[in-house]
Length: 317
View 1 (cartoon, rainbow, N blue to C red):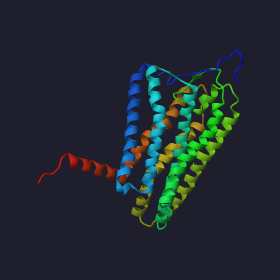
View 2: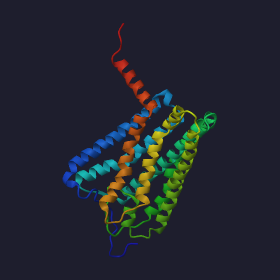
View 3: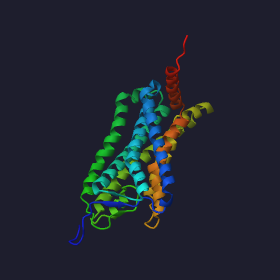
């Protein structure tokens, strides 16, 4: 609680990237181009899956939702990050800061659950191919798409109630480029034990448990692939989940790097670089992995561009 001589702050000061402002223009341009690539790449996946009939199957519908989560996630952070780089810092209201954290966590939890749904889809397709169509029907696919969003954003409301009850009347400087959990609690004058417990429980439920589910699921997938007699058959089965595996490795790897091996307050630059892994690098690499390694996505691109060229340059008899 705030004392009599303490002021409740109406704004937080975000320091952003200390020590790089001498080269802020190249850094700004680099992150701006990265943001454009993230937007264009993920929007392209959403459009392709929406308009290409051959991509209207569960695996690519899950991918479309993953791309949507990436867009929400990065748009919540990167525009303000770019502003902070240009201005060499920035201000944010406590409410604005907590809303940014809410969207950040909600979209992260949704991504985690969507990745586990994609793993279940690959498990059914590879381990039980004859039952795949009957089990992964429209109803189940709809539930597996809806619940990640509902669970991620509704459960976060419980934690947000506790966060909005915190008082901020000590230091108002956030040594970060966005409103993450630890920087928010570091400047709070209230007892944060309850909200820390809630965050730990939600992280176990919505990140660690899905990760264990994915590991167990892919164990079954690999066992089934090894039982395939021909090398061509093994490669074909593995190729259907290779891009998903790479995204799982990047997503959970960066989460574990940040939250299971946190750095101390003296390692500000190291902490910032680690945060960039999952706020910028992961959404940047996701569409590239799927577009480069997936033949169906490349086929959809060719169909759209060929159709456009045919309309632009019609053949006259």
